[in-house]
Image (cartoon, rainbow, N blue to C red; front, side, top):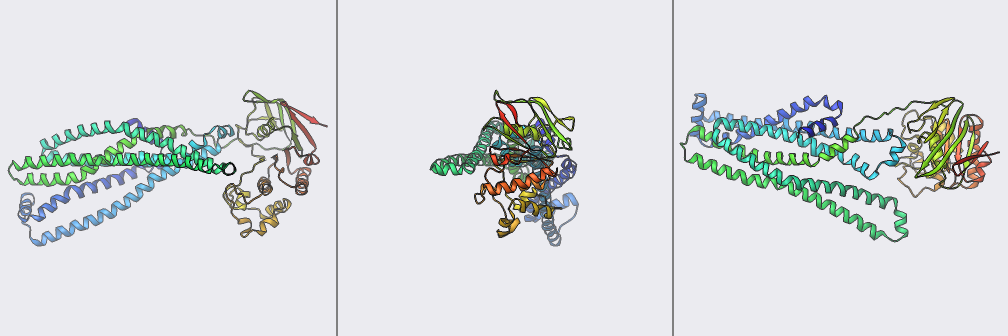
Length: 561
């Protein structure tokens, strides 16, 4: 348990650790209020219902007779105390909940931040289904099932220790016997239930990932599913995994809730023995106080022991969550070295292999400012890989990149001076404007933007939309043509004003007239030395606009004169 606590503390962000003393203070106040309210409520009620006993207690402890006026004041004070107590506790609970779930938010934010700043190779190797789970589910599980369970464990233990302390003071023998009995029973229950809870949590984690996988298959395979008339198969597969997942969740919930039933039986037995023991003794005031205290303590201890057991089992069962999140904990370098492209970028003896296949065989390429370079070749022979090496997304197995005469290393992150348009551009679930500006909201250069939209023949279409440039785009929207998507992606790249623009079959879905118009615009940018363009394309039209043309064949880059 100590190791799990240490791991949990490692996951708490630094800014939250600084507020931990305040959180613990709130917890202590909340615990004390609970302790006072439960332990003293029933004894007070018992005494108020028996005026003779109440007066005897007053004389015994305060040496003063009590009249009706004092009783009314006592009752009013009792009501006032509970009103104030519950108001304070509601505020404390709000602050504690925000504190704990803010930690969950911070962890999710860090996971996404690290992912965005990681290398392209890491992006390709990440298990997307597992990563979705880790971002959306695990931080919440950590906060709810681990961190909150630690809070419950310590706060409820504190209350139980207070009650045990007073019980030992009032009747040492009975309290000690009850304590030993409860510890033995609790230990047995933990041993019995831990294995079952571990199994259920492991199964639930796997089924969650399976659910995500099945859902993504439906989203991204929609057309193929419809075309092959296999809707029922995919629907049934998702239903099966979803039902199994929820069935396991129900089993886990019901299994943990049955703990209270065991403790309720145990405490009723203990209370019965306590009453029988006291009945055979003299009816002293101390015994009366102990009996009423014992009854009040049972009301609190029954749920407290259940909470302690459930919290302990939750922490142990979710220990794998701590290990998974700690694997992400290592700080990542989020700021690559900034390079500036001024005159040239050179590839020297660059080689790259994939799955034992040579894609690039010690090629050389000189890229000068203002170049319009076209690279052609058969599919799957390494053209996209070459663009990704130029972009800095991949590091070559051999060879080097030289920027203005100095060797550079991108650490497999995109160079700052690079713009990239892929063959299948991705549009975000955001407006057209946000898709082009990449969620930038300040200092938008609308003059530059309008020039780009007009040059790409997007202005009239955007103006015809109900909300114009603020029209929202849906994920994988089927209402847009491939050519419209490509032009929006091209507008996005041009708006960022890269020094070098990489185009991977970025105009292959345009009609010839529109493609020619856009290529004239791009050619003008290179002629004015505003931009350098390297395009991968099979299209003969684009070759009319380039000043350098290459063929990539069998890993060799051959220049056409």
